[in-house]
Amino acid sequence: MSFDKKSVVYQIYPKSYKDTTGNGVGDLQGIKEKLPYLAELGIDIIWLNPFYPSPQRDNGYDISNYTAVNPLFGTMTDFEELVSTAKLYGIELMLDMVLNHCSTEHEWFQKALAGNSYYQDFFILRDKPTDWLSKFGGNAWAPFGHTGKYYLHLFDVTQADLNWRNPNVREELFKVVNFWRDKGVKHFRFDVVNLIGKDETLVDCPINDGKPAYTDRPITHEYLRELNEASFGQDSNSMTVGEMSSTTIDNCVKYSNPNRRELSMVFNFHHLKVDYDKGQKWTLKAFDFDSLKTLFHTWGEAMSEGGGWSALFWNNHDQPRALNRFVDVKNFRNEGATMLAASIHLSRGTPYVYMGEEIGMLDPDFTSMSDYVDIESLNAYKGLVDSGKSEQEAFAIIKAKSRDNSRTPMQWDDSAYAGFSNAKPWLAVGKTYKEINVTAEKSGKIFPFYQKLIALRKNYPIISEGDYKAAYQDSKQVYAFERQLAGQKLLVLNNFSADKAEIALPEVYTKGQVLLSNYENTNLDEKLLLNPYQTLAILI
Ligand code: TEU
Image (tube, rainbow, N blue to C red; front, side, top):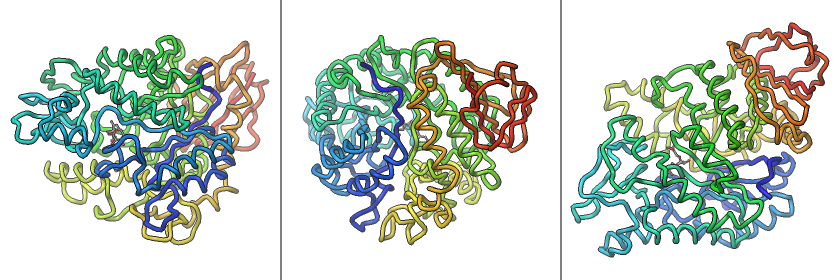
């Protein structure tokens, strides 16, 4: 049996979910405490961002020991308790495997630096750097001690890329996955996994910061098949998702088509770049609806036709909150949040909910650079100022784009620190917590709507299994698609604008059943008038 297509995944950033020790940092016990809440929401799987030992230069994506728990988050016993208690609620865990790179504090790198040639071959060392840029700024190569060589780091200088061409490296990494399988974990998210397969000879590449030279290389597919066979592929209902950086549809069909035995599904980020000016993240621009709609349609149809499978998401720990990007949040927060949710939960793929999304959390509205912690934001601010932007201009960009926007503490109630901790949190709480918090939103519009969406997927095979076809492709306001399964059809209309939108509804649909809407009393007329940010799903 393959993975369960009725499942919905909920992503938790452990540092920011719930602090039970009073040190201002969330922990594993805190997540355990909130399991009843997650069961009430109805989710099936929790994806945990890295909680392993790490110097935290990149908040845990710089791992110094793959098979232990960072004391900051608790102990291995806490982890085991979390797994077993979650099981009682019918919830399973998905762990984050960061296998493209490790921290320079990892013993492999330390031994390599000390001159051990066996471990030197664990890294990508060259006599001369290429012109590739690090995704966190600057050149992607750094001097390897005093050897005269350079090591590759596609991310921070403390995150050294691992040499997957070395079979010993692959064996060590497969052991890591199997270590966690032995702890009862069946589901895994693989960080930037389309970057693991580097060519033997690395060459300069002036296009796009060097990305084409190391992204989606053909050998990556081979490594994924090997990983599958050596680890999670042995569990019948394991769910795996690969995070694909700057990828293509063709490769994503290959990564996720079950016949190829690579991964269950893929994350791609193209839809979250439609508010980048000329493809650059550190810019300010309103989102381009036409590009968003076209991307969803192209990917939706190609993945459906090619038998691939997508992870569907609006938010994660690397993105500012989608509500602030795609919705007139001052006037239509409830309508916008529910429409965004329906537009992916009713689509073809597996939906992911990022903590706080289910209560409509917003960006924190920080007022000074001193509120930011993220390495990428701090580097980008410096880069913007160095390139001639004023401090105010640079700050405005960081405020809109920083990854810290989504990393602020979960807002549980209106008490101090939003009920996250009784001590000052590691990252400040968002300004809106008095109004936007779990206690208030349980009886609001957004949380119950998510409950409904999650339940619908369980009860309607057309939602979990149906094909995807684009609809109303020329609309300037509405992103629409049709799902099809065994003679049944489901039309999903999503008005992405703050104005009403007129739609010509085919006659068959005027006699259909309204499966879901975020407004009451919709008449299915042939001249259908959608309200601002309305979502409407009609079943025939
Ligand atoms: O992110 C991959 C990635 O490509 C990010 O650089 C992303 O494009 C960027 O954050 C958007 O601005 C993964 C993790 O999700 C991220 O948290 C890590 O920092 C990164 O890998 C390195 O492990």
